[in-house]
Length: 165
Image (cartoon, rainbow, N blue to C red; front, top):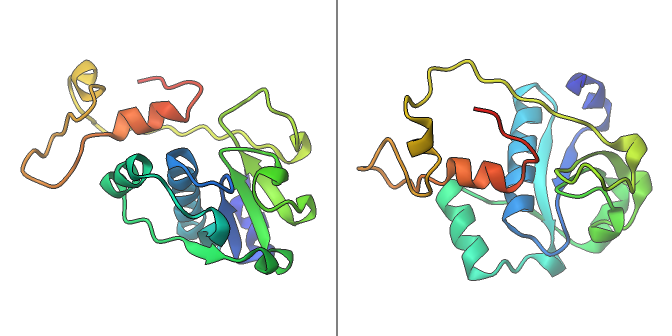
């Protein structure tokens, strides 16, 4: 994927389901940060009428990151460009498929906007954690004295079809 080809649509708004959950929150946050890293101005956002995460999802998101999305009203949609994350059906969020640039979805078999679907593969060549089976256990952390929950693998596996370590 040539991320820079989306520069002409700046800023891009990454949005998940209209009723925000942890998959949508984490996915939109990560994708937004990736695009910003490569110089494409982006924001992660939610719709105002769907921004009421339950306490479980709120706790999980707050353990992973500092989540401060742009909050949009429905009338704000028609003058912005979007990347759908955690789904590829505009009806589940912005309802306007003409404003969708692409979709990032972990449900490979959902083909609502198939022509705008992308596949992302991430490789990490870092040294990592020696005992992977231990690292994959929920709440494991290599920094027990910090305020970390050790949910990295648990969160990643929850919205990925395949994870190879």
